[in-house]
Length: 85
Image (cartoon, rainbow, N blue to C red; front, top):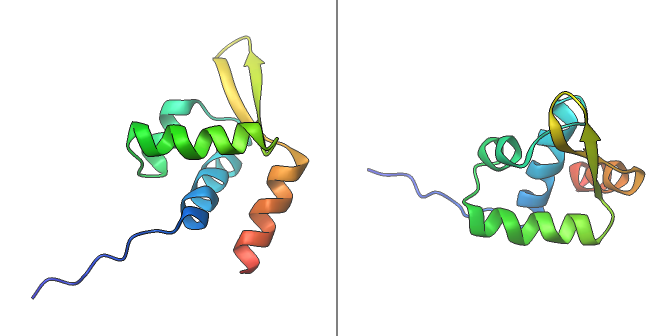
């Protein structure tokens, strides 16, 4: 008998994205975030856009890696609050 897979809520997905960035020393590329959070491109873009627009994550120019993304103070605060819930 197959067990049912419960779909993740929007906030579960956002928490997954924030945790991937935090685990990767607060710097990760888009592809790594998308893969580690188990998202397809369309869902990734939707949630990632929300986090960028809301100033929860920021774009960082890393000379050795190119463009990477890190958590802002607001992003760290949101991650903490979502983990508490």
